[in-house]
Length: 471
Image (cartoon, rainbow, N blue to C red):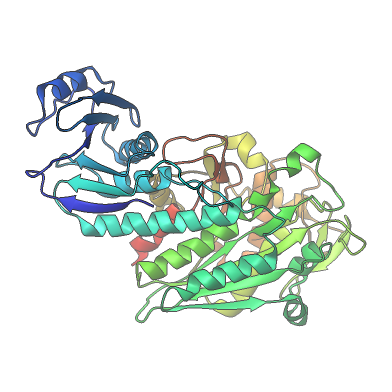
């Protein structure tokens, strides 16, 4: 990742100068006349970059980078545009206006610089952007927040992008343990299959039963002194999903390494809370399993006994994520005494049908809590839309064999029905529980602003912004 350093704006001697530009807004600061003239023709569209070569002059090259309406999203897009335009330049200097959103701009640079490679960089390759000099008023707090946000989002992206031949539940647990070791105050507990069986986590065991690589439950805890609130974050962690006996078509299976994006986001956000030393107690629960097919795979029609004793009839083994989340939610309610529970899950294709590729579905009975998370998502540059927990639909989850069915008998509304199923396991804390179905925005098909093709790390930025407000 590039590093940032503030410099005196009156002492700029740059080979490559970056000038943020807004349509119709004149440039100030004593810039050369040719730069001012070119800026007047720039569209100002967020993230667009125009290059002005100036051979034999200083600066030798000027990049005009559009910031749109100069809101946070525009500054993030500008930072990402800069990162992609200067990927072969070791150092650049940015002429910052007084109203620059430094945090958003730095997040854009860092997130736009992201690339996932299992192999290292090619020997003898071109230089990479390593240093960004900021000519403007220093704001180290903004840079710290941007760096932690980008580093933890990168952690979530790396975990999600990792191919599933390597990404076993055990491997994921080891990565979380290693990440936690870098920060004082983080503790990790990992339940293996034997302990899961002894403690009654039937949903996790059922989903992981078809794989030779057994399931896990990771519990990551940040427990600062003087914390006044306890937040439990729960994330779906299916490290690969074939659909089980209700097997998926081949094309639907190709990207199922991303089916643990919720678990990646909640553990990364917890690491971020520790890195920022937020005075909020956070416990992350990541139920991890591979949903594969063999002689011990669970079947449609099986009745599963979850943590705490509630049973559900599983009528579709491709609706597996809610089964592992149910165990984790029931455990959180019974054992952890949280003030708030938030779960994130790549749960349904219905999310994408209803809201498209960029927006997650948010469910909660708590208006204040729903608004706080939606506001945090907006501030972070992520999008949510609140959906209804329609009480009349609860009857569609009835079962003749168990306490409830894992999928609806009729009525469609797949994302809503999944949320209603999970609400049963929030129990007495349902009024302090939020479910976010983030299946669609967890993956980007192409580079766009601060998103890069592949895993987006969706949810890390939202959770960190929200946790900071609780502090």
